[in-house]
Image 1 (cartoon, rainbow over the protein chains, first blue to last red):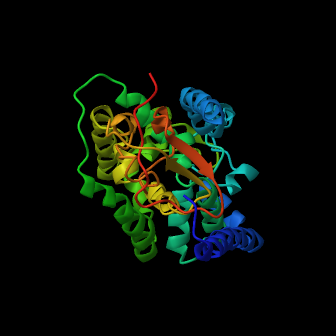
Image 2 (image 1 turned 180 degrees about the horizontal axis):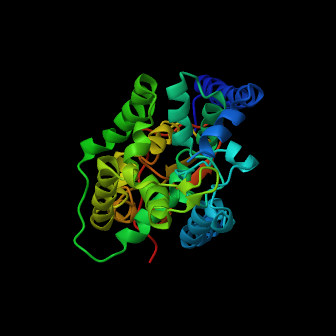
Image 3 (image 1 turned 45 degrees about the vertical axis):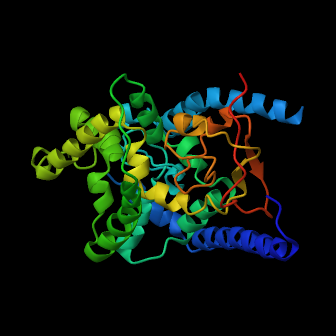
Length: 45
Length: 298
């Protein structure tokens, strides 16, 4: 579905913004050492 | 011409979907066979990574972590799992709920069991909200309040892939020189888990994907992204209400009405209709009421 011009930039900003936000979350979590916590939990029965 | 080509691609994708899930969703992430000799679950670097689908990390042969197990763990610790949110969010933003249709091993098992010939039933539509309750209450709230993993206690996939194998195998843990599951651990909780698994196995035969639609917290997370994901379904043309899309859809969505429904698992079975297409893009939104489709080409 083609979007009207006024919604085009809104949608573009919204989606790219969310993707950047999630990628930033991923990087922040990795840098904060969350992978170690994940490993400790998942490697324990 | 372009449409004919894409329809051929969809037909190939529909055929290879089941083998893809079986290999990449079930076999590959559960292929730590050295456990037979070591008697210990894998604890190498891959256990730092979450599998995108529901795959119990307590399974004897599991290589990766379960996202819902990790979500509960962080809730119990009172921490926000940024890496997990980023991981699932990025996948969701790109593919929507495709993981449920293309990678989830438990989804694959449900698809296979549903092939068993029996009388089939629909699931009441209000039950689809159960997965959101499961996410909020069992995977977030109760673990936070009680420091216990409540969803894991009832998860039928965890029972099938970890609880039952460990119980049958019951290997001696080399660290503690004791059975992995001691006899006194098989109490009412274990019996309840087995009962829930048995109940779901019956449901799998008579209804299509009941766990995904009613209880899966991971499906609940991914479902939020179907409306915004870069991958989306579009219906082009004029609908003649042939109901083909509903008949082939494993989660019984009327695709012509809502092609990007939160319940859609992006299995692409509905692309059997010549006017249902996959579209990719950052600058598109899911149409609320699309132009509908015509019957399939004979």
